[in-house]
Length: 528
Image 1 (cartoon, rainbow, N blue to C red):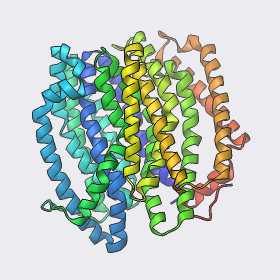
Image 2 (image 1 turned 180 degrees about the vertical axis):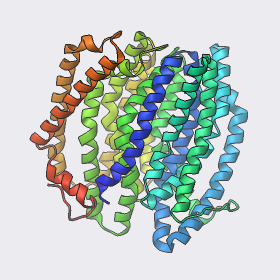
Image 3 (image 1 turned 90 degrees about the horizontal axis):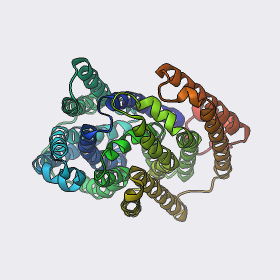
Image 4 (image 1 turned 180 degrees about the horizontal axis):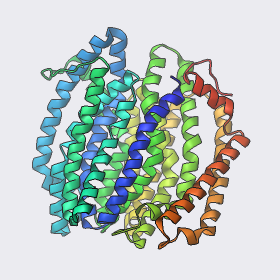
């Protein structure tokens, strides 16, 4: 299967999840707006979600995958199964202990870590504590699911792990529709969503567990022991968890800061949901596929293939994310108005969220490139260097967020995230080049400026188009009319971009056809 087809397999599952996620956020915006229950739910949900990214996806998709792949190569599926059972026993025990401690400490965690700004509002504070207590076991489910997803990715079975997150959104959509049908008040909706999150964790775990069994590996429980393999995993996983979850670390810190202003937490979450679509579909797909492929190339000593994999991945991500970033920058307000402005979500909320989304657009290429650069370190079992750069990025984020939030409110926090993202991306790339792990690729270097020019021209066209058709995109215009108008503008922008990208030489049909037909990682397939 070619590299592009593998990207597409993961991206299709992620795209489905993001589409259902949009539907969920639209219903939540109508039911809760940016009010106190929305703030409480989003703050409470961000806590287990952050730990999931730190200790589950970040650690296991970065540290577990190369070690699991090595076991398959050395000892076959049986050796990989033994290694998985050793890890499962330790992971399950740690998660059980962590869950108990966190549940008992939740009032203190909310007051001092999650949302200290809520302490001045007793009702919001109490709601956040209760909702977080309900949802925190979701972490355990998703951590175990992430381990099994890493196994599936190493076995080149990507779809089950990619499609499982869809069920979180399906379940929460069901909760919101039921709440609307029964006329529940806001706090009842918040509790329903929290129980829905917990149920979704169990469903997602069941899906990947069944997929792993179908792949020929049945995991049993072993008494937790620190075997040499487990120790090696822990040495790699701690920095990998910090690095892989850097965005989540920044989001948790920013939630803490934003809790000092009513509505700021929810505004950041709604904007985050929109820019996560291109980030998830492209960035996560590339990172998920690139790590095992790069690990395989390096283990076989094929450095040319490894370099080609990295270059083609960056080329692919920029080809798709540069126009997405440009569109978010110039079209944020009509996008937010179409998706969220109804019910309790007011025109004022639209303007606030749109400003944040436009800022996120500037950071989208950096966030995606980080996901393409990090496998270049993890595949070589170097998790420390990205951790150091992640720490620098966090320091930049905290400093700027604390400085800008009193002046620009939530938009200041978004600016801090974007600057920190670019700092991290530049540091990662510079180190790869300095270590000679990133070979100079003339076709890539010539295509990037052309893609930037194509994106800039498209952005100018979209800007004037939204002004010209502004009367059809305004508040009060029927939903279908707004959706049709925005859809036509976006479609026209896509046509302009692709014509320019191919016309200017930023992409060519031969490159795409070759990647679709053959393995994108073969060393002999150099770019045109």
